[in-house]
Amino acid sequence: MSAVRFEILGPLRVTREQEELPLGPAKQQAVLATLLAAPNQVVPTARIIAAVWADEPPVNGTNVVQKYVAGLRRVLEPDRAPRSSGELLVLEPGGYRVAVGTGGSDADDFEAQVQSARALRQSGQLAEASQQLQQALSLWRGEPFEGLTGPIFDEARRHLTELRAGAIEDRAEIELELGNYLPLAQELPALAQAFPLRERLRGVQMLALHRSGRSGDALAAYRDLQERLVEEYGVEPGPELQQLQARISSNDPSLIPGEQRSATTTTQVLRRGGRDWSLGRGWPVSMTDLIPPQRPLLGRALMKTVAVLITVVTFGFGGGVLLAVVAYLRHSRFLARVAAAYLVAWLAGAVLAITGEAERVSVANYLGLFLLLLVLVASAIHVGVTIAPVSVRRIRGLAALDQRNRARQVLERDPGFARTLGIGRPHLQREYEDGGLIDPNEVPAGVLTRIPGVTAQHAALIVNSREHHGRFETLDDLTDRGLFPAPLPPAVATYLVLLPPA
Image (cartoon, rainbow, N blue to C red; front, side, top):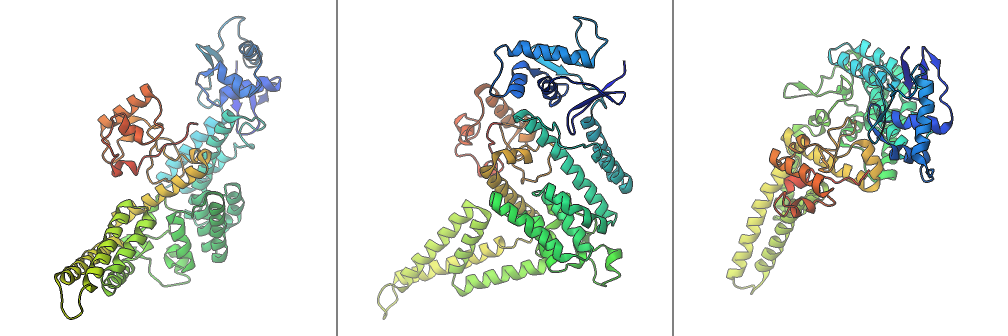
């Protein structure tokens, strides 16, 4: 008997030798779709009932599921002997499993072709990689599990749509690297509307428009995304996209590849430390690739100089204010406390310095002047070190902190969307950079050890605790259960996030 092929990248279809098989009533099709949402995995009968009948399950739901499975077996395995176990729809303890072999579904073919394309790209075969991705994307016939509703289908649909968006972005980046700016500039607006919150896709669109001589349209694309993010989630685009917008606004010559730029300008490619930091090879994989041009070394030095001068001119008061502003922007409680200490010390010194009789200088006056001088020196040094860091490692750390704060804002406003983006779950394939957030309820022990200060022993205890005592409801549970000393170390807390149950 020839192999059966399942197609879920659109309305559900099952074919044999390219002939579509009749799947029977809608509920029977929904039973098969529920199993295909988790191929090769055992799906409990109760989960099938909940997916197919939602809030109105039949009284004899288990028997009805058995009836529909029997109907599907007659279609999918017509040669199966009566009362024999099925090979495609397998009865397991507690539920059913649909056996999908390699290449047995369009979703499997799609993922295999995408992985193949990424390997081709890694080896430098860009044209072949683009063609492979185009072939993979052609497998899509519409919305996955089209016409089926419910949490199980919605989650499967979100997962598959995320994979499709990643493949679209991969192909767009490759086409950008190949220099096909004009076709991309025409193609990407529709895709950007289909995936309106994908910053990576919007970045490729902006570069394609800019390199096609349409810088105004590139900036308009950025504003469109910015308005959507602010309106829906109250957050701004990420630092890499903000920087790209600034570089397009300033007509940064390094955004144009050498062969194209040579025809229009003789300006040299911007380099830092001997490395080409331009976007000439397309949208970067990591945000850190864009950080060095964000504030060139001279610009950072000028910012430090101005900050120190403000501190000196105000005799230390301005240093406290500047650190308070930086603390607010970085969401740093430590810097906020330091800024408050400087300001309190400055006010105390000012009061002591001006109290007493005008004709004679008292001990209190000397103490006040000493305190002011101490605040001046200490805050000037602190401001000089903290503002506009020169260290690339420090800049990357701040960018990651900013991403974590933005991800937490998205989680607060829309937990479901945050789950779709993969926030807090770095062990899953995702396209959203959340700065390294990790949910101790979701990830395996090996991922927990990525957090600074979390040892393998810590990770094993966390996993054991959640398995035997349930989910962590708050971060305080980690200390209440004796897994960490109280209070939870800030170096650990900054990476932890708790997603609501799925």
